Amino acid sequence: MVMAQTEYWTVEMVQALPDDGNRYEVVHGELLVTPSPNFDHQDAAARLIVALRAYADREPAVYVAMAPADVYFGTHSLVQPDLFAIPRTEARRRDWKSVEHLLLAIEVLSPSSARADRFTKRRLYQSQGVPLYWVVDAGRGVVEVWTPADDRPTLCRDVLRWHPAGAETAFELQLSELFAPF
Image 1 (cartoon, rainbow, N blue to C red):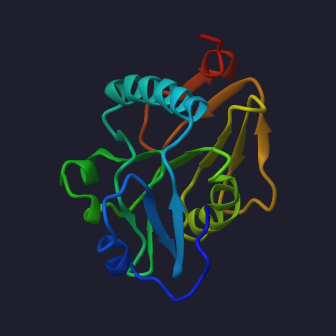
Image 2 (cartoon, rainbow, N blue to C red):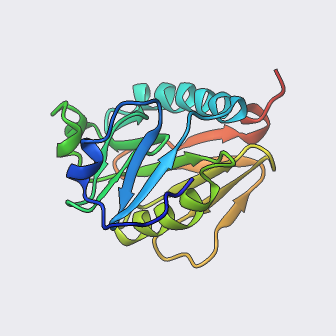
């Protein structure tokens, strides 16, 4: 959900909002408010975090985290990707404000977040040079794969692959596992 734009929001203003169960983010002054995620969102996010953390445990260059965790892009953009990867050296600082390089950002679509995930946040990640952005669409059983140069996503329908710089091996996950019925 996107709030009606009544003013230009800053990170400081967002941080002053109440802890009411909503996720508050700001991208270039636009306030994004998302209610608690639905079941399909949480199921896909849980499967992804398990697979990505197992991969990161084998790859010392990579650390994988999940929301809620604030990722700052200056004083006018703060987002909480559903899942994201950063260099392990930055994770060792144990302070979200010191995160400077997202290696991978992932948003799992919910009806209330689709516009912000596909447009507002995608453009932010692209403009910030995030090398890879996945938009997970559990309803369609696909993952939109974006890079900073893309005008359109590549639709992944079979195997998600990611080989971050400095990693010895690539991450691979069959979409049949990600979207498996339970």
